[in-house]
Length: 146
Image 1 (tube, rainbow, N blue to C red):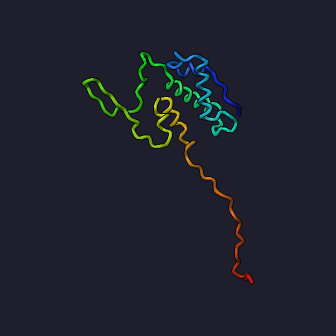
Image 2: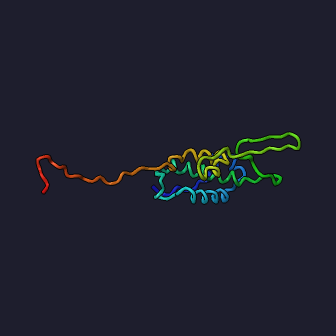
Image 3: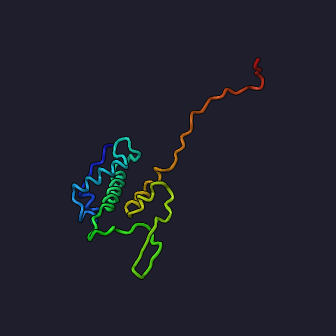
């Protein structure tokens, strides 16, 4: 198991809507940030290279989507669910919808982040490792301890 190398061609094939504006060097920078969030070393909890490549590309797409340039200086795509709408003077607001876990809200800002969050749920679950078992010498009924 080795580090997964970034491939712009793979990213471009999976996420053409992001590759339309993101240059290879920009996307490499997004990948570098993604590897700071999800380990891309031999010590990673994700041992399968194909699975790690998929998750790292999802995280790269999430970071790229958050960095999408907005024409006209707007605020970018709306995040969350619509919580209220008004018509006069046009008003629209949204909220997170009650993110259950710490850190979840950042991932739920894009469809890529939400997919990453769902796919890595098993990494956030507690793991039980039983301690060593002690061997107990049975006390035989006919043996008396003096």
